[in-house]
Length: 166
Image (cartoon, rainbow, N blue to C red):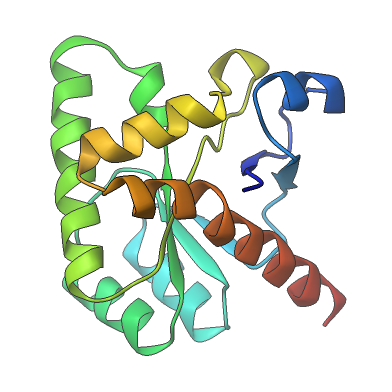
């Protein structure tokens, strides 16, 4: 199985570093692609309406309207791991709880889920095994966690390429 990660556009890394982390390829999301990253409800709804491949909710809030629209339009949910790694203590515990609730609701709505670092710096990039383990800690099964770092991320990467060409 091949694994893929998605980072923010300003993240500096090279292919050798990505390989050492266990990834076949790391994709840079630059904000112009079919991956919408944010926490504002209006922005996320607009992205879904415009045909976004996936949305990443950075504050892990469960908004039923956003999730329903994502489910209806087959928009994927990308769970960003960097915000979890960036925080400590009580704030981290709060985010972990919210991320687990978001994941549970996404599975309930039958939304395909991916797990990506969405790191803005090389220091926040996680290895493929770390992404899989965090996904499992949030409530994903082994199969869903591996698929979320493999096939689901590849669908986002491929979908973003198609979205860029439009």
